[in-house]
Length: 93
Image (cartoon, rainbow, N blue to C red; front, top):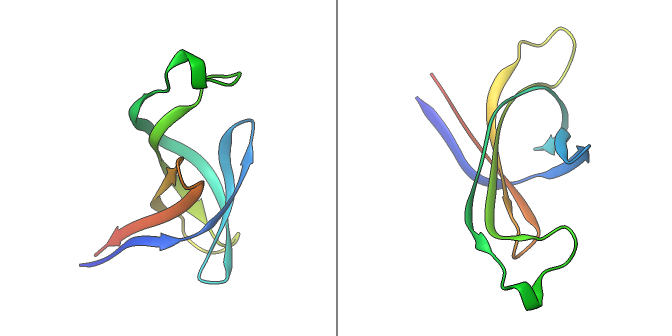
């Protein structure tokens, strides 16, 4: 089994959800969001902007493909909100 963990990716959002990302120079289209969760806590009221940001990390498990004739796979995208950075994790047999 191979595993990719924490590689930088560029993510485009639509309606607040990942829609596309570039990984290793290849554009992937998100076909479905499988799961979403977040870690961290809300900022104190004095530091909140509208809408209230979440300090920590946001995770998106998505099904994506780099092309019409390429089978889709499941990827985990992590948004590190403090650094405003996206990382990708992927495992497969």
